[in-house]
Every structure is written in C-alpha cells, then in structure tokens.
Length: 218
Figure 1 (cartoon, rainbow, N blue to C red):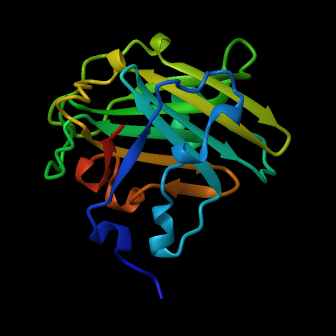
Figure 2 (spheres, helix red, strand yellow):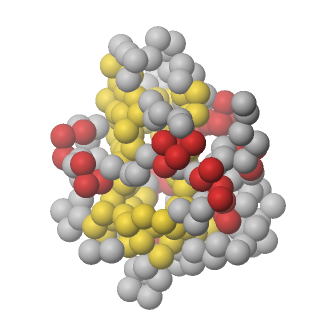
Figure 3 (tube, rainbow, N blue to C red):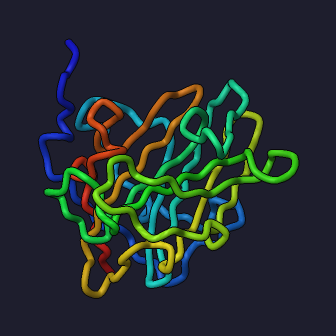
C-alpha cells in the first residue's frame, strides 16, 4: 500500500547538531568525521533505508557537512549549471527556524555541493548557492569562493565534504538563535533520493515548514 503522507510529515522533527571546537579539515578524508556527527536517520520512520552516511557539525565559524556514497555503478553526473539533474548534496537552512512560514524569508538559504564537475577538466568538487523558489524575501548574495568543498572519488563511490562559513549563513547567531531550520537531500544516479524529512512531492524546495529543527548545542 502506498503511503500518501509520510510519517515524518506528521511530527515536528528536531535533533541536536553536534558542536566541534576542532572542525573537520576540508581535504576529502573522512577519517576526521565521527559517529557523533552523523545525522539521524529519520527515513526509518517511513521504513526507508538510507544508502549513504551524512554528517554535519557546527561551531562559531559556521557549518560543516559531509556524505559518503558507495556501491555506485554509473559514472558521476555533475554539472553546476544543472546541479539538480545529477549527483548532488543539498543543504537548506533557516537561521530563525520559523516553522510556521510556508515561504522562505531572508534567513533561508539553499546550498548545493557536487563531488565533481568543477575545474578545467571537470574533476574538481563544486559548491554553489541556489535561490529558494517563491521566497517572500531572498537572503543576501553569497560569494561561493568562501565555501570550502573537497571530495575523494573512487571507482564505486565518493566522499564529499563542505564548510559553509558563518559569514555566508544569513542571520547566523547561535547565542541568540540556537534553533535553526535544517534540511538535506542527497540525489544519486544509482540509488535515488535520500532526504531528512520529506521529498519533492511535499515541496521542500519551496516550503521551510517541511524542514527539521536543528539545535545548536554544546
């Protein structure tokens, strides 16, 4: 039987985001990520298994996020101009966690990360920012050169990590606003989609109220 409304949509999903004074180094090496940084697997609520590990952590210098995809058979498809059509990791944030807002405010942002597709040969990782559709007000422009991204690509998968510095996060103020809206979606040519709360059918890319709440704790 097909579930019309995912179970995750029926809850106010909240979790604590791990604080790290010594943040991971952006070098494509997964060894400095820990189990404490792993994001919860809410897909299990809907009987969906995750195909990848996704990590995230924070400190006063911003947010760090990473993923590891294995058991790939198809070549990576990564193009910054059409990033949504290939292999990608996206991160959405709302620095005011306004869960009642159905449309994005200036505190809401969407970042995307690709394991390849950059550089002259197209073999370098890519970081970018994408405007949120139908936003009530868009966040200030971000210089993507400030976002650090690294990857390690193998024959059957890849590891990808990125750092979004505090100055690129609109309204980032963990002392006054420790609860933030948070969402990720990982898209893969072999495995499909893995997401934190809801999929495309419930318009996560438009509606911040579908995202989870991350608590920036110690």
